[in-house]
Length: 434
Image (cartoon, rainbow, N blue to C red; front, side):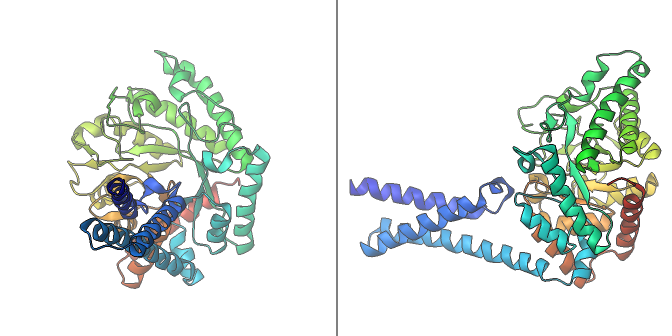
């Protein structure tokens, strides 16, 4: 019996040690407090029981050592996180406003996001299913109005209130907003796509009215990745084949433009995603590194046609994915690649629209060799305007802390920041409906 108890204790010690190393990663975002509590309770319990009945056995020493290491690891990570958080929250408000405008942040606690808005520490808020559960349209609208009232009192431009309302499998605000099918269903296999224009506009009108009514002014749609029919067991969440409009570049370009132009009529910016196109990628950047090996020449004639068409004829934002385009930059995901962002989009294409990253909580960024902090600095220096931290809001503090320190060390490109701030100001002034 004693042997069995020792085995159980050793297993528990190893379990909390494993959790201690990883509980600050995005995987634990929804249950981080519980994970930390488990580490403390189990760790302290194991240490106390071993000390009280201490015998100089290998198992007892191992249990004490492992449990102590788990507590020390968790404590160290908590101290590191809280130091970054306090540095951000205690920073001069002018510095927070200057750099904070480059972040759109998700939340799990409304009071926390109110605090960040009050400190001028963010440029936008991401609203998703967990934020609206069991709430009416009026309740959601009231929360958004509360945040925007803070901004008005500060004399600042409104926050970007963003969501993922593509239709179909990605409809984060339905219910209570109207649940629509995926945009591809509206086309219904039409050979002459122009015959479907009215239906596409009607679809976008429904979404535009719904989003505008509750105060959302930025929608992360449409998906303009081409449907290459790739279905992979390594793709757990992206599933572009379910979300793409079509395999035909011309159809995608037309439909996406109609959609974006319609949303703009209701004061809602669209977001075309995910550059450089994830239709050819068979791994999922939510959980792993992903590479795109297609040549620039082929992408220019195919996948990039919808991006360039919508960029040139609307005020759409463009979302940068986390796949690495190996023909351009083998080291960095597109979302913080200088060669791709500044080299291709800004210089080669001459595009001066707003660029936003996909969620920096994703493993392709958080687990990259650069890590979240350096990726954030590189993204801003490459010409990114908005960094999205949607799933794990705690990462905002690490990312913002990194920018603050980079500015202190003169590691941020001033010209890039100035250009970005002009783009953001122009967009917030021209949207005209909040």
